[in-house]
Length: 108
Image (tube, rainbow, N blue to C red; front, side, top):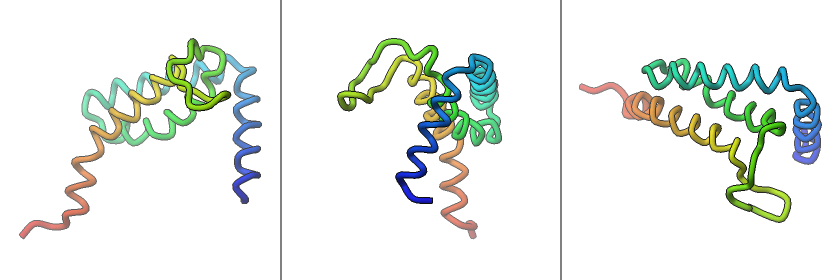
């Protein structure tokens, strides 16, 4: 799949998700539950946070809020995007130590 086709596909998915508050609430609920479980120590929940953060960026159009940081004339980071950034930081925090241990190899 070419890059242009992928961008158009993602734009279409985002457009369709913007009309469905049910999808938005389902993604938000899953994201919050996975976030709480990851904060409690679950690595599986931390791994689930990565795709859920991406899904939240696609589904949060109905509740985006004010633009906090303008990246270009038509792109920016909104208040709702902060939840995805927080989820990615928690996932990184929980998953980084096991990844480092795995990359270090067996200890002798």
